Length: 300
Image (cartoon, rainbow, N blue to C red; front, side):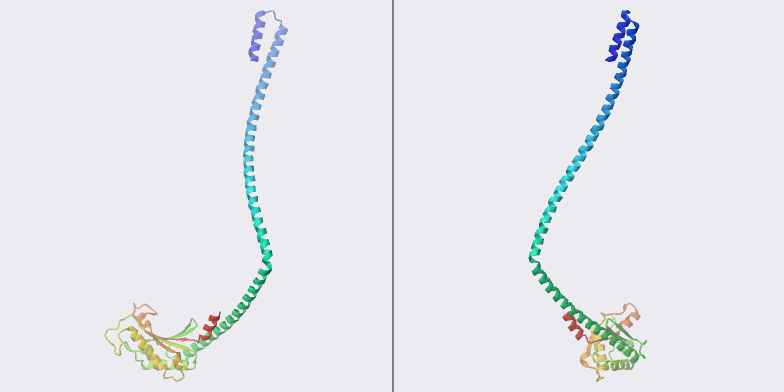
């Protein structure tokens, strides 16, 4: 608008021709000053617009921060409320505990004293039990050594001696004891059983289980004396060993047990001749007297 005014004035001056040069120069200067002022005002307007944008952005940031602070304040208020509730609960629990503390502590002390006494008793029994087990293990090692010496001539001929699980196992293959399909003990086998009996007579507190085992070949026909299957045969063979042992008067007969296991406890697969040979056997299982141990275990 200032520009239009200036142009109008200039036109008037030129047309009238009566305007002096000095007035023209003054008006021209005013026009230039007006243009400069206009530029300055436009610059200020731009600056103000930029400031306005900055202020609007700042306002948005402040609004966001305000919302976050309000959310945080709400969260803190909830946490404070929860904490106050917990504090009240703790105060109630503390008051209740304080009220009953003496009685509870006395009862707990009595319970603890009883538990300590029971623990001491059990610890003593366990120590005694460990002592008995150690003694039994020593006894069984000595028994195995005695058997190894007594049966040394037969080891490697189908006889083996092994100590495991607190017991001693004397295994005698049928080739040392019996002919095929028979339960009559041959001469070499009888010598081995007699030597075994001598060692057993020196250990009267040992329990003796004699087990008969067969392979899985089925018995065809009747072998006599009612033996028609492997159960019968394995039991007959176990009884044959018992009969030889009972000839030794030093063996306590009540310690002897005979059992037939038939084909159902093989050492090896019955798919090979070697496996079948290993499975046809008598096993003498020697166990220390466990009555005292069982009694102590029942008391734990």
